[in-house]
Structure formats: structure tokens, C-alpha cells
Amino acid sequence: MAFYFDTPSRTFSEYLLVPGYSSADCIPANVSLETPVVKFKKGEEPAIKMNIPLVSAIMQAVSDDNMAIALAKEGGISFIYGSQSIESQAAMVARVKMHKAGFVVSDSNLTPENTLADILALKKKTGHSTVAITDDGTANGKLLGIVASRDYRVSRMSPDIKVAEFMTPLDQIVSAPKTVTLKEANNIIWDNKLNSLPIVDDEGKLVYMVFRKDYDSHKENPLELHDSLKRYVVGAGINTRD
Image 1 (cartoon, rainbow, N blue to C red):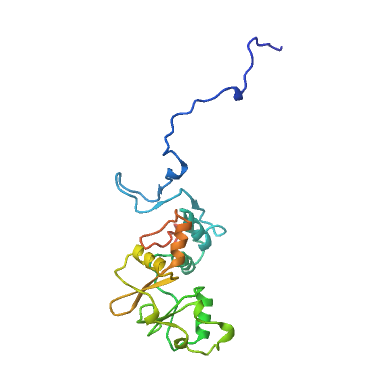
Image 2 (image 1 turned 180 degrees about the vertical axis):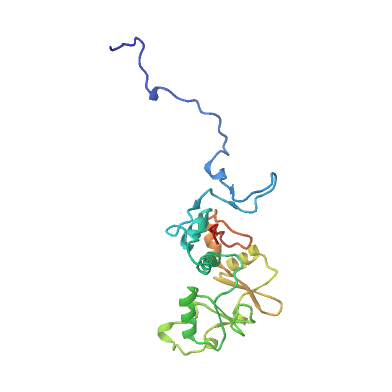
């Protein structure tokens, strides 16, 4: 049986919740989503924390080194999947760590006796266009020069030409001592309009490289999640059987 109400009916649009007081500081930019990843004592800072509470599933179709880099840029953590060999998993972690850093150990090094062909082969292997030229071709040899993309033209130069003939020599390179801080290094890069800055010790041996692209990357992604060496944070999945 139908029942008729004598009072008027109401809808949600007829009601309003009176909002509480919000100060001028209550804006989204001031909200912190930092989340601890490991256990910590009350009153102490967690050893590892995320800038956003987001991790990726430890699955082969999800969490590889590309996902780890993308998620670290946003402030989260990716855990590299464990259903692969230890060597393969470690290589993925290494690629994430080498993608960006404050002070970078150079992985592109040759001697003045190498050739343009060696430069091109190394660039294809590492993907990096800046090559440190040292006396022994190692990352910690005595710095003699730098080769960047602007130093050569493939169409106009022989592949057999030696690096010594087209590298930027040491006396034309802006460098910094190993005592320099990352902030100071970035200021040197900015003031001198450099793309890279070699860090050398008292004996003139190469210690690190600092790159402008890493500084620019942090400006574009302010929530990037870094470790103590300004490298991206990444995890690795393990199982309970091995």
C-alpha cells in the first residue's frame, strides 16, 4: 500500500556541509606523502623512505630497469623481478644506478691513441656521448682530455683518426677538485655553461664526472628518490627457496 508523506521531500543538493577553517598554508604543494620503507625507531629518520607511497609489483612483466627508473623519478620504488639469473637481475639494478647520479664514475674512457671508430663503438655500447680521455684508458687514469659529440663529425672525418687529434685537451677543460660538493659542482657547470664537469684529485687523476643533464633532470622531477650518492633508489626481489 502506498504511503503519502505530508512533509516536503528533500534531495542531497538542498544540503550543504559547512567547511572547517583552512589556512593559506593548506595547499596541495605543502602535503607530504613520505612513507618509510624499513623499520625505524620512534623519533629517528627511516634509513629508506619513499617520497610517494607507490611501489611496483615484483613481476617479470612489470618491474624491470625501465620501470624502476620511471618510478624513481616520481618518488616511488620498483623492485626488480627475481625470476631470472642473479647476474641478469644485478645488471638491471646496475643500469638503474648508472642512469643518474650526482658524482658518476665514468664508464666511457679511452686513451689518446684510440680512434674515432673506438669512440663511436663505445658510444653505441654505453649510450653516452661524453668520453673521458685518460693516460691508461681507465676511469681513474690521469685526465688528458674530453671527447664530446661536438668534437667530431663522422661525415667529414676518417674512422682511423686518433683521439689525440680532435679531443678537447686538458688545458681547455674546466674541472674541479675532489673536495668539491655537488652543489658547488652544479654551480660551476651553470656558470661556465658546461654539459659535464670532470672531478680530479691532487695528481690530476679522474675521480668522478658530474653531468648537467642530471641536474636538469632533478629540476624537472623534484620528488626523485635518491640514495646517498644521488643515484636512483631501486629494490630487488628475492625468493625463500635459494
